[in-house]
Length: 286
Image 1 (cartoon, rainbow, N blue to C red):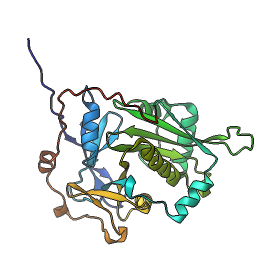
Image 2 (image 1 turned 90 degrees about the vertical axis):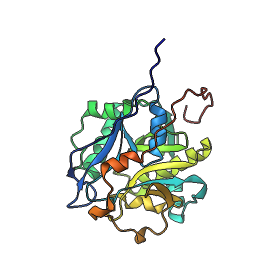
Image 3 (image 1 turned 30 degrees about the vertical axis):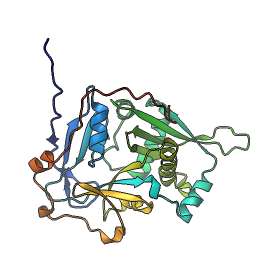
Image 4 (image 1 turned 90 degrees about the horizontal axis):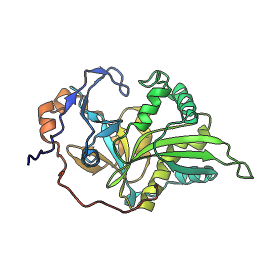
């Protein structure tokens, strides 16, 4: 009988393109395919090393002359809401959460379009159509949930509409907020912050230690909000470390701050893919 061993993932680099976070910079990404029987293990392992998921691809920034993008996560045990965050929670008391399988709807897409047109009209997703949106939501080879936030401000509890959505991956050590969007007309509700606060609550309910936020970029106003949560850690120099004072960071835009691609790939730790017993435990998002 012939036995086959799993093939180690292959890593590739994208062509340079204008950076969406820092003016005058060029971005480049290191990426690998996320597929096969061991997709979840690969996603869990590489997420701990600063990678992010987009559909069936895992990537992290690997720019030729810049190392400004830092993967960020919240350590749930160290989080305590600030006074302003407590007000945001109270302000959204009528918002109800519903977790579903990752399945796109026209209502979600309409909210997504409003969000893009208001916040990211010139971004890379600006021309995304319904079919591309559905692919972003539904093409996931791992354990994901689509979490919807509905407004029930009517005194009779009648549904007022969809206010926010987050595509969320469930990792072995936390929740990864893959992509979120919200109704731009409800500025006072600070829905982006509220969705993060609610994910911290979900992680607490599930006994998961982290909420992964994506990339924080010192010097980028678009990413500044991620530093406003107590308990934030960043992945830097191959380890997770407490962020500390955000003002003490400067964007690493010196070419000498970036290691060659071959060295970066050589340091990536890959998962042990030996067979393990099925985990039959349940979670609050099923």
